[in-house]
Image (cartoon, helix red, strand yellow):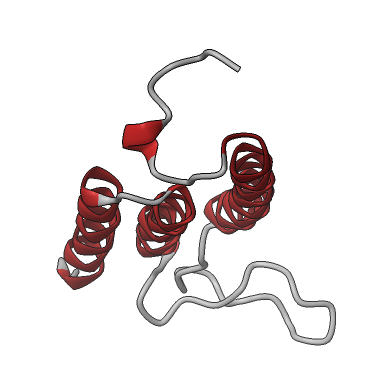
Length: 117
């Protein structure tokens, strides 16, 4: 078992978190959050991957022989759910950034400290 996918997932998450911490623009922060979340995709796929394994359900193929590894479909479903939730959260945060830019005239989080209209 290789540790490379886990290291890649951690590296991608760290790059995204670094971008969020150092961001001076809300749109940039949303994109960095999306990058950090894509590390979870790699992590979930690394957890569910089995070397030499096959997909558990294909209607046009015979079932795998006994003892042959099968990939975990639950982890694949979780990765797909993670992608859908990530796209939804990104769209919501970008819409919020657009509203903030319209009302405040800036996307700099440092200038959005006060809640006064």
